[in-house]
Image 1 (cartoon, one colour):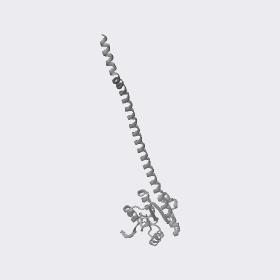
Image 2 (cartoon, rainbow, N blue to C red):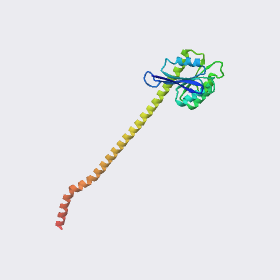
Image 3 (cartoon, rainbow, N blue to C red):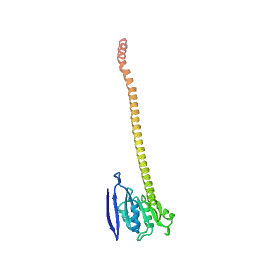
Image 4 (tube, rainbow, N blue to C red):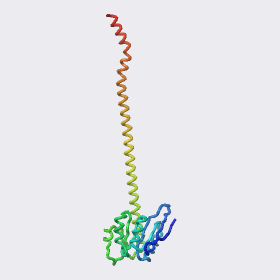
Amino acid sequence: MVLLFFMRMGAKSIRLISKSNSKGSMAIRILIVDDNTDLLEIMDNYLNSFDYEVSTTENGHDALEMLELAPFEIIVTDIKMPMVDGMELLQNVSKKYPQTSVIVATAFSEEYSYMDVINAGAIDFITKPFTKGEFQAKVCRVVGEQKLQKKLHQDLIEQEKNEEEKLNMQAIIYQQEKMASIGQLAAGVAHEINNPIGFITSNLGSLQKYIKKTVGLC
């Protein structure tokens, strides 16, 4: 199911999509940010064949406002844009939304290098102009890494849960063994107490006869 609607921020129109993938769960959410509307549409079309939920906007300012409304797993952003450029957007995302991966799309002639954007927090860099295959490969690699990270995180949580359950079971077994030891100790003490009493009781008649016999001799 796909829900498509538009919202306006300032003078710009922002396209938002809510989509479930073929398995019924929510799709990976991707935000594309570029002031070149033609390229924005091209990148959007490049991702249409995948089970992604793609939204678009034309500047970094609107992108930050959209991030406040809902999270995105991936942002693909241009560098040179009005209001808030791609580098400022990248820095804000790295600081406020560390779980969001940013791919920077820029031209050879622009002032920032590959290392500039990587050091600022980008997960990857793609140079304009790029082919459909190049763009899809970049996005798919990041999606794969995010899925792996989520799986590892879930496995870690499951492992910690299993360790906690194991420790709880060990504590229960230890407590049961402790109670059993106390029971055995109590039974032993009772046995030691009961034995002298049994001896005295069983020989009390003989003792009485002995006492009477001794008195009769006096």
